[in-house]
Length: 332
Image (cartoon, rainbow, N blue to C red):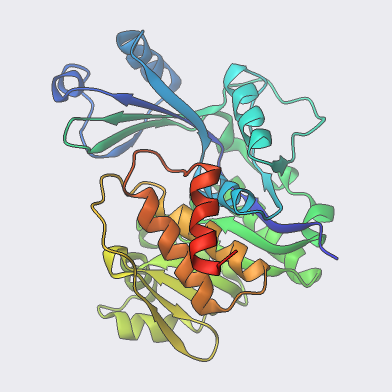
């Protein structure tokens, strides 16, 4: 019997969320509405300027948000990542443990360095602007992959952002090979349109002979498939994934369960922050499949969770929120 429902691997970033004015962004020459990679010195400069401003922080990273959702729903999840022996690394590790996510740093000393950090600036119009310093997560490699844990998991979940780093890509390929060897189901998310746009070959290397489950949004599906229409893209994805879920924002999701197409309609809400919606969708979907729910029910739970998180700031829901969603959808 598997010990874990989902084994995830991906980047480890501490999210720091600040409410700021447009004039602050202009003063600090921060380009509004974009995610910009910056070095540690630049982040420290911004922190100095923003000193004393109230902020929230949480452990983040796309796959981390997903495995946390699995845990909050009642599943058992494990996360392989890379954090440093520093205050942010301590916070990240403790936040993961608080959420019930086991990880590769339990009982181990962490390396010297700086843990990755994403500064999130929220302006009065609810738009989010991000400045990210990857820190030690840029060195995430196959050394952080645990074969024994993969062997004792139901599903391996790979974060698409790893393809942008040679070491990360190698780690993902290695983990996928281990999962295939041990008969563990494999899942991958494209994470962002820029991944299939600029790193398609790397994604193909990770996917190899095919994955059991693929997560992407409509834009990512079309870019990866090299098609203009969703119907043609849907057909093309069957070459690479035995099943898949294509998220469509307010329209819901389009699923393929291996034999048929399934449309899932989502509740119409006033979205104020879509960051993390895809991560939560994947977490709820994976949890549902790990408890032997149908694809249609998995899609229903995933859409319900995603449509809730977009109505608030932050990439995660509280445990009681997501448990209530499960109760409404599953009836228990």
